[in-house]
Length: 585
Image (cartoon, rainbow, N blue to C red; front, side):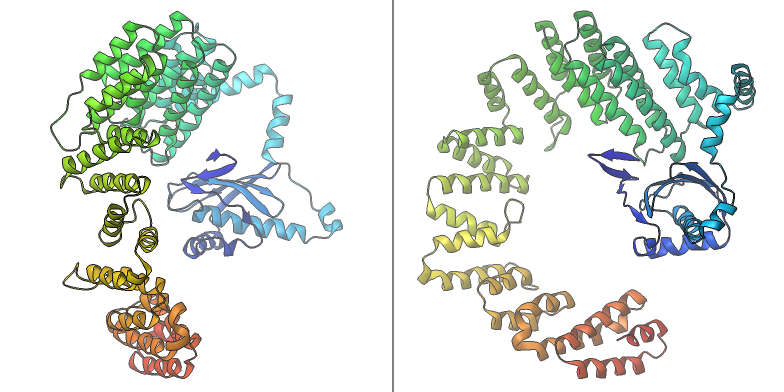
């Protein structure tokens, strides 16, 4: 479970607050049904009140899982289950416990004060635990811990990992050992870390990262560096042999790199600076993180740390080892070029960075950056030249890039008031382009603002002809229909719809056509339903059919809807689910 700006994310989903007295309205019906079955079958074998609104429950089934929840009045604000379900934040085990808690808590609320006083309140496990910690002597606690750890290898490893720093002097090796002990604790005998174990490993490593961050903030930078280096090395190895679909191990790596960045920006003394810089470059050169974004993070942090010519030269040499592979798209080489540019920006002046980009215009990001710079400086001739060169260079190899260069040209011609070229490009984007840079309405409005009013109607007809002529199979209905809507030519929209009807198109056209063509639209729905049902079986299809029967009624054609419903009941009398849906109309 992670928090981002106060929003709780669990299993990649937004964690909603659940109303205990009305959670059926918030949870997926299928999950709700399964959870209720678990509750009714008595699969909840143990529920512990941990105090302060926290509950922990054991749910049996094909496997045994633990559910933890926090209840605040009528609201369940936090909840998690250690099962592998990842199709949503709420699983059937959580739902089963919700049913149990609602019954238990609401029944308790319904008792009279006298009944509540007569009903002994069981102390929560958390309360009992705290009391026992105070009552037991140190010797008794040591004896208990020794006995438990002797019989539980995983607990023994976890204990050593947690407190190994008390045994040895501060060193990188100390934290290597701590991380490895944690990994060993959660790794099975085949060397794999399962879904649930990865989550627990991540939780333990997050605690170490928190300690490292605190150390960095309090001036203990050597300790912080030792810790994050050990964490990164250990987690990179662990993630290769783990089910990290919940993102816990990857999240640990992101956080550890965040501490590294924090250290790099904190003004390290020279020995610590050199140690960290060497560690970053060693792992980049050894490619220990190749294939992950963290490989790039190593170099980005190192570039930010550069202080000397020798450090700059070492990075430049490393990056120059990455050669182009001769393919149209070479991700590694493009990334190396960007990092080289970042190094130049860090260590040289702006003119050197511009010369580097101009020498490497095969990198489309550099071309874009130079075009945008030229436009900011109102050097439109340079921007036009760079964009036209891009169109010529990329040609058929990358239509997406060609469209980018054309959009830059459109902006250049707008800025230089070259109306003829603006019209040509706006027409291209409207007829042949996508919504990648602007919605189609933007180009349509642009054309309308530039074409003389007396010529506009003929121009629109030409646009429609151009769109319609793009395919020999079927007109581009959506583009033609939206023109008719924008021009308020609803009679033409109706004729187009009659030629190319489907459920969605008729429904979308209702808002424009219902006033004058209600009966015709209802007839289209009827014909579509009649054609649809023979080849579609299942409740979801029947629900959709009934939805459009209701739309027929909404159009003021109830007799037609009822007549059709009657025909369907007779024709499909063996489809029980359809009959049930029709009965609700």
